[in-house]
Image 1 (tube, rainbow, N blue to C red):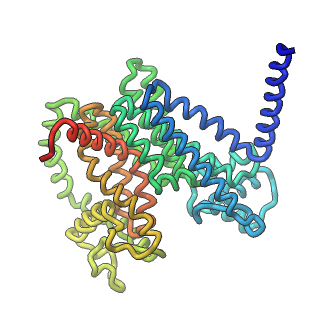
Image 2: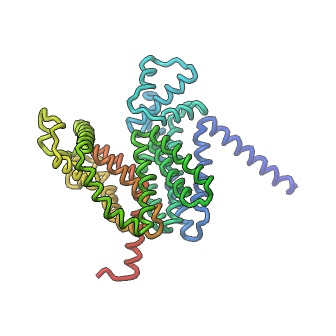
Image 3: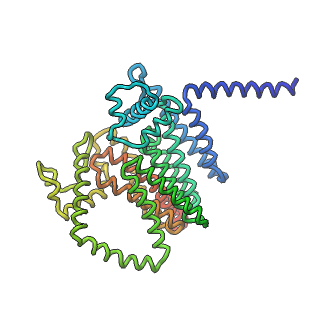
Length: 450
């Protein structure tokens, strides 16, 4: 009797589990797929880790996943579905989700309002990610809350992928600190649970970092060629998701690889240090280049002026006369352009200034702003330490971060937008902060600071 009871229990348990999974899949297919993805990510993240490190990383990742599930479930529970079709964390999300549903309906021939048809294909906020969401819902049905889980899965995959790379190249402590920052910084947490394009953009950028490492280190020519083709596809995909994505990709992968190649050869690095300034001066004195740079600066300043007129709290980067009345931006002088660029970089790092906080939302952001200042202070130490451990990875991450920072800094003007878009550089900077913190901790243990 005992021999038949055990198999019967297993059979009943299997049936119950099948019923539960089937019911869950019927209610929300993406929830089931997210659970499967989470299990795979956890196993990948802790593979090869032992002892305290395994327990810490496992605890961090499980906590990060759990908090995200709670946030998305809280959105569902707090939404009055008698009044609205679905809830969203940000205003842009509702527009994204609705457009993806309209695109899905068009593909299936489901009638939609004429205005919705126009907005579905509108150039405003266009991104290929809309078609990704539409295809996903074409496969499993309309899933406004499941799309949040999809974005969460993409973001967590990026975190684990970069953690594995950083741990191998930069060490355990730096990787653990970087992973913690990516999982729990409030602004990055908000990105990770959104239905916006950023999670997929982050994942593809992380894939490009892994690919360039593989291309440099694989000995086989055929594998390198395949890696280069894959990198080109990633670059095109990044541009299709976010305007300027190809520029950041080229700066991160191309610029980082070039810097690493030069610095690995001391004589070439010395020659470059001597020749590059002279070449820059020779180029800058060319009238055609001066005109092009002036027009580019005017275009960036125009975008900045647009942010100044948006709702919310803003900051100014131009000389005061350019904000007065009908003064045209074409009148901006070279010294004013230089001051604009310098102020933009300073504002990117410093804003929002703690003593200028004017709202409760900004006050709630203050703790993360303090963490941001600490990250900025640690970055130089981390870059030096990273260059000694793995020059290629350090150069690629630094170039990616610099490209993202410059693009955001020179077009900023709204504090809320700056806080959101500053997150585009954080997936690359947190590892330098981790390296810098590891170096500070090591020096504190080995010598006195006095």
